[in-house]
Image (cartoon, rainbow, N blue to C red):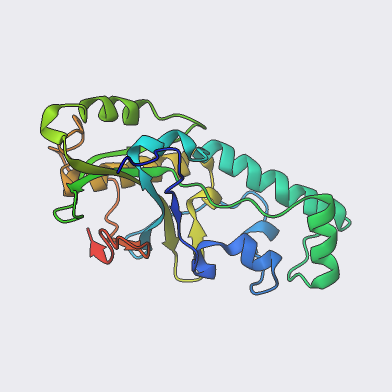
Length: 246
C-alpha cells in the first residue's frame, strides 16, 4: 500500500500544562499575568539554582518539515510584545491582572488570541521502522523566523543509503526556566541578548551530551557558561527522551 505523503502527520501536545502556555492561561482566566510585565526594564540574572526544562511540543515525519509553522525566537518575542502592548492600550494603559469573560471578548475581538511560545530548539531523530532504537542524529536552533539552514543540511545527509528503511522525525521544543518564584518562557527573558545566549547554551548542552552524529561542532568541548541541570519532557505519543536529565 502506498503512503499518501500529503496527509498531515504533525502531532502537537494537546494537554500542555498552563506552565508552558502562560499567556493563554491568563487570557482564559486560569492564571495571573506575570509580574515581570508590570515592571520596567527588568533584567534576568540566571543562576545554577534555576530549574531548566526543555518541553517537546511538536513532532512530525521529517519529510513534512515545510508544513510546520516556523517562528524564530526574535519573531516570537515581537509577537508577545505587540500583543501585550495592544492589550495595554485597550485598557487605558494598564494590564488586567486577571481576565474575565467581558475582557476576554474584547481582547479576542479587537486584538486576537495570545501568541504561543516559540519552539526554537529542534531535534531530528532516526529509528527502525517499528519505532525501536530511536536516537538523535541532529540538533539545531532557530533564532530568526524560517531559519532552518542547518536542518536542511542534515536532511541532505540523511539521504545516505545507510539511513534507508529508517523512520526520520523532527521534534520541536521550547526551553523554560524556574527562578524560585515563577516559570519563565525563553521568549520573556530580558534582555534579548541574554535570551539568545541561553538558547545557544541549551543547544550546546544538548549536542555535547547527546552527541548527534550529524552535528559537526559543539560535541567535543562542554559549554560551561551555565551549570543548569536540564530536564527534557515529552508527552507526545512517542515519549522519546521524556524525563531524561542532562
